[in-house]
Length: 109
Image (cartoon, rainbow, N blue to C red; front, top):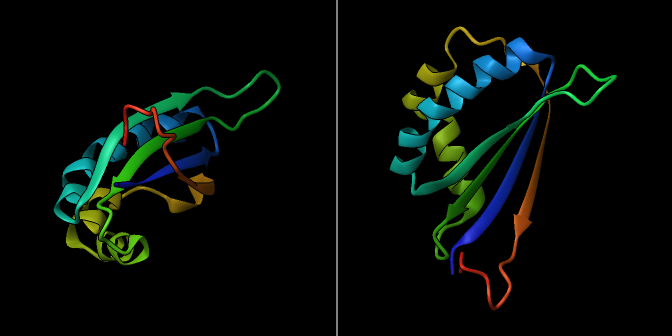
């Protein structure tokens, strides 16, 4: 069974969210080369009274893969470096990662 991960990126503001949304579109092919599948990417605008929008990404790794090894391989790849070129990484305030275990009846098993 694949290993699923929900990644939540908190960004400094709407402009950072817009820029990072475009970067995530570029990440998808490079991640696929490292056997990381992207199932969806969503944006959530800043809540009233907050300036921190979020980007959510649902990804998966093959069940036989070491998640940390696959992620590190992607983060050290030329594709990742090219995707991030010109983006100020300090615009990402926080990254939260959650491993998700599908239920017995989940369509994503």
